[in-house]
Length: 176
Image 1 (cartoon, rainbow, N blue to C red):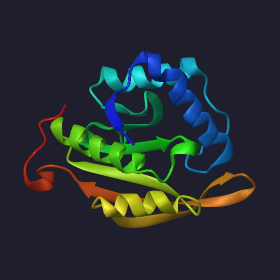
Image 2 (cartoon, rainbow, N blue to C red):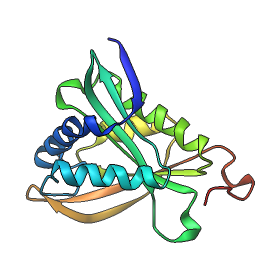
Image 3 (cartoon, rainbow, N blue to C red):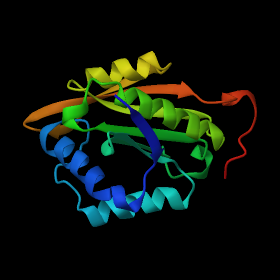
Image 4 (cartoon, rainbow, N blue to C red):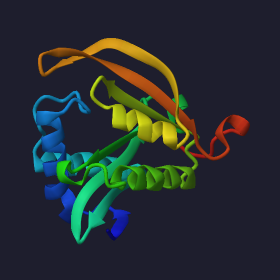
């Protein structure tokens, strides 16, 4: 399998929206219950790019098979060097290493813009592969929020994981 990571473009929005639609309707990785339109997905991407955050896609044989982006963990200024990751892989491409490649690319892209900490907010139960992926790439579990979401007729927890980026807390951030 030849996998190519690259920045997402506007032309990728239909594929990105399709991957996310499946995740919203059939999974618990997202707490959204109604899939956003392609127009909304394009707006979200543009908003992140406008403030310098990375948004990547993974192509397999020329087909977008997954995407990942980082965005602000929280909106307050003091959080400016902390990002939250999102990684989604097409249902027919899971288990092929695409999520790992995307997260590795996202980690490098965030370090390049002097982000210092990445946070993962992962649904539990139902996203055990995501927890394992993050742990394999150096994330540590820092807590669990119990019963914070209700989707598909059940209560869901979120596992909070984090990973230091670049210099971490060794020096003040330059971002922002």
